[in-house]
Image (tube, rainbow, N blue to C red):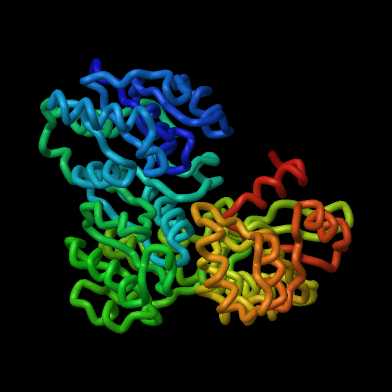
Length: 471
């Protein structure tokens, strides 16, 4: 094919998966565009993919453009939209979630979603499915997975030689990009399993055959107005699913539990070879219920054995190292109160006689407001707890400061994000760590009787790995 597949924002976690999948399926006409070089863009270059800075590539009329939502205002995306509007060219343009939706039209697509546990459940599900489902095609997770060779995606047959299945997958994507003839027996032949995000109702772009909902509690309150709004997004999703939606009986939504498409899955017990608590037992039980249905109940023993062999995924209660003084260190992506509480339960089971230390980097200011009552309770169970400087991400401090000040009941005006972090730490009964040097001091003081877990969806994880020489 002559068309160039232009991926704008190729250094992002989501879009880099698409680039990697296409490259592994034999597409050589791919270029990536990103604002700055990173570890991800370097990995793509190592695969032979050209990476351009913005303004360095001119969009052409027969290009196919896939872009991350963060790059919608970039010159390349705006060029593509203008070219499409003015010339009515066959140029194809998708944002990342729209492209996942386009992919899902050609696969038996299964989404793993929910407030907590979607990365873990999707990783386990893909790990088992690629071994037991004859028509497994593609899996995408929102985290790096050791069992996927350190990647966050996996395709059928990639461990062996080029085979008929990979040829079929290549043909499906060729059709998506060119509309050239496709053998219609390939449509909905292969499975596509993916982690699906509820934020801004992105998961509604998917053409779903089945879904797992892991857990529900109000989240993304910078978008969802209240619990009813949040729950309604999942109800919309269920209406779109063709077959079953798998849930546990303890799901926090009677409306969803009583929905005709809902299948209640019974809890199972799994002997994991790594640290996981109740939440992971729940995630694994959902995967077991799904795969048991997909294999018509014929592979129950194999499903359970594979689930127990799964080695976990990066930043999901991942054991990083043991320090020189003997302290054991973990990193976790948790950023809501229930994640901190679940992690505590898992650590207590594994290390009943150890001192448990929590370093928490809040992710976005609205979650401090949302969890102002829940976070103190969750942190109280740790022997020591620390709050690291808030990772505000897409939020503006000035627009949140007054609201947070009122809810955290302080008479003094909050003038910067460090003051807000210190106030939140005081509210939680924790100590405030204003910079990474303060984090290093906590780590250096910990001895062999201590376990430290760092919770963050922000930047402290990267700094931590640098400091521990794990990069």
